[in-house]
Length: 281
Image 1 (cartoon, one colour):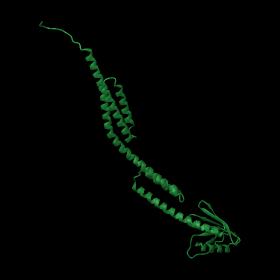
Image 2 (tube, one colour):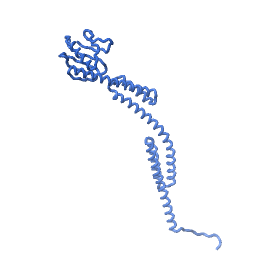
Image 3 (cartoon, one colour):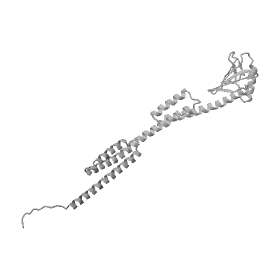
Image 4 (cartoon, helix red, strand yellow):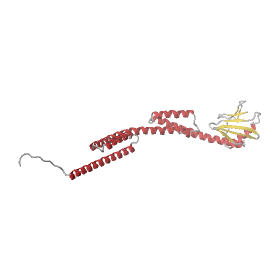
């Protein structure tokens, strides 16, 4: 019985089935691991999207495309899937650093734009806050400052000029309001003397009435001390004017020199010349 011999072997079916089951279990575990890693990747992307909402779009698109390729390979060689997972993880790891740098640049730009907006809105508010004294010169300065801010919001010289400009406007506004209150007081005093009411038309105030039967119209302006008075041309107003002066004086109002427009005559002449008032006669 010595010498070469030949035979064959055969593995029993239960061993083959057991190996298939073990292989299926191993593959199922690997697929579960891949899906868990995909879930972790998506959570990471969602987190980055919250941190960098304006920068994440392209990264999200690339990662989603990569994940789709990995899932398409789940029925094939799982080693390709694991290589894909590793590639996505490395990509995200690298992009985190890139995103931080880009976010710094973006935040700096946004800060500049926010600063521009704040300063421009502050300048625009001048038109409402100081509408009583608003004029073309003020509007032009606002526009010049706006251009300077949009060009360089960090220019300290421009910021100082704007601050000084606003202080000047505040002072002008206070002076205007004081003048307005004083003029209103004078107008109401005239109304009492003339037994009439004050009619307003913008910055102009008008009182029509009479003193001792003499019709008189008084016109005032909220921005100055000037007084225009319309009286009869027959010379009957002298006594009425004197009466009116006395009542004004009793109300602590000094009437300045009165210039008769037609004749040039000056009534109530003062040693120290005050603002001119005119009487049409």
